[in-house]
Image (cartoon, rainbow, N blue to C red; front, top):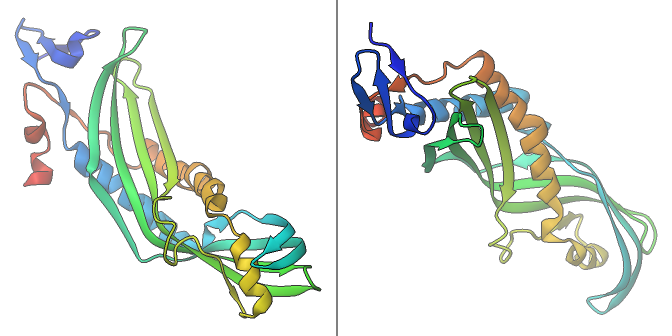
Length: 246
């Protein structure tokens, strides 16, 4: 049996076999397939719970200003928010990477990454305002793109595995119908109130989805259901992922 010994920085460049043979270029086998499966299984679990289980934060807008030529004074309350619809879910293939690095304690870690993209998202709330009397509406806003970046890190000496997911919403498309609050029923007051909505309001909600919902699902999959990729010695990255590329 060939025994492999990898120490410190040399792990990044080569490993020495028990026979004295130097084995270069160490990679994880099929890390692309692993990350795709992790993200797909995470999405399937969300679907089992229903997308509407992704709740949006409540928030209140205090208004005391002249908006569109009309003076408004009071509050607008948004509550019971949740994800209403999505148009597409996909994985960004160029995000599927693996990277090796030497740590300050002279151990080596490998990190796999992948990005989940949720396209054209609509979030809805119950809306109540006390401006010019009490009024009730259903509000919704469309976000062009929400991304969730998955990271799986393993220390190859201690074997500790860390799973993190971070969320981000695309703020580059603030024109057209994106990031515009729509209130139903439509009337003169609702037309005025819609202009008070701020495009960055849902940033905290997206972060909450990443940390409190998606990351725990991914962590459970990594720790309990998916087999961590094995090592490929003396091979290229393409060869290590030949099962994915076919």
